[in-house]
Image (cartoon, rainbow, N blue to C red; front, side, top):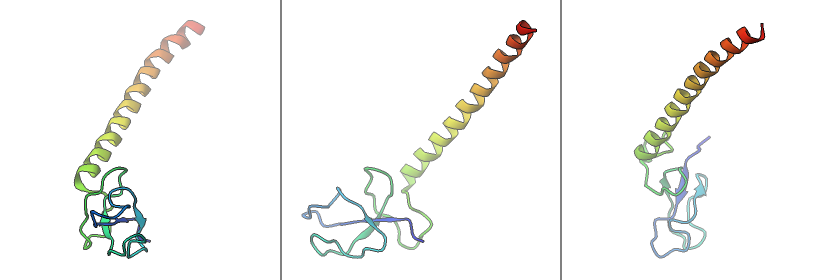
Length: 95
């Protein structure tokens, strides 16, 4: 199953840089231009290389996604440590 998105490269088309299509659609329904693979991220229409079907995000968007994942993991670990330090004194007070 190909999860990549396609968009119209025609600058004069109504859907240019406004709408993304499923990878099964080959031609633009508005102007008839052949669609190209673009980045899957919201608002990003950078073209992708067709030879690499496993990539659905451009390099910039992929690094942003990876950075956000690392930040979420870091914050979750930090929160677990803080919760552990708060829980231990609370248990001692309750005893």
